[in-house]
Length: 277
Image (cartoon, rainbow, N blue to C red; front, side, top):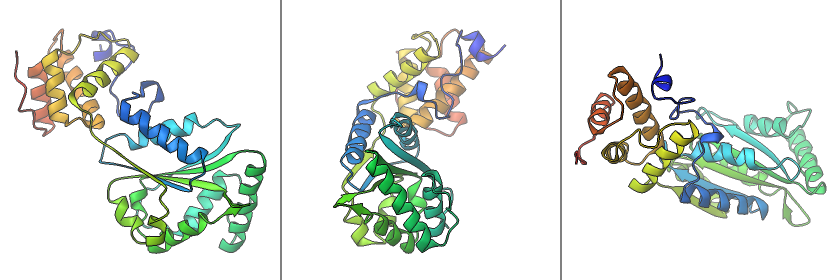
């Protein structure tokens, strides 16, 4: 038997994987999506979403990618996994995702082919957008300068592509490598950790999607989760998932304050604060 069966859940509600069915549209996540969509629809050129580790930047990037209708947008998502990215790599990845056949061509030729492709999308009435996740890994001045050059791709005075950068707060340092690029940021928004009420609603939302009992976590447990996680969604998921496993192993009907304290201690998180009522 698994904890899903024990608690009559249809699936694991707090797995730390990107699954849009579990997307919780908090007030700030909704605002972030609206602002970024505005930047795309008005072809602002460059927009930035910042947030600390685990606050949901990647979740929003994937949600935005899924929400961009194929008949209105041409979109690409790049995930930067190391700090040695070259402009050639970046250009080829963008060109490949936008369907440029000769994406291995030399840089100057590739830029021409990419420009033709973007003009074609524009003539079809489509907006082109490149989403770059973990953009704080772009640490090269050359890459920043070339990115600024891509923002100059225009037709009849209208920009042909908008870049949305998702990254940790140190992304500001990367953008500062090229001051003219930093000045071109048309929109910037920062995600914050959840407050206690949003943490509670987030947990109940994910339980509902998984078919769980809304009273599975006691009120005191929810308070302790918020304190120990500091309202960071990724940590909330980790705490709740481990708490459900612990509750199953000890055959508890509800997840209470004591279970959360024990799990938080095992994970090295500070759960001091709320006490049992």
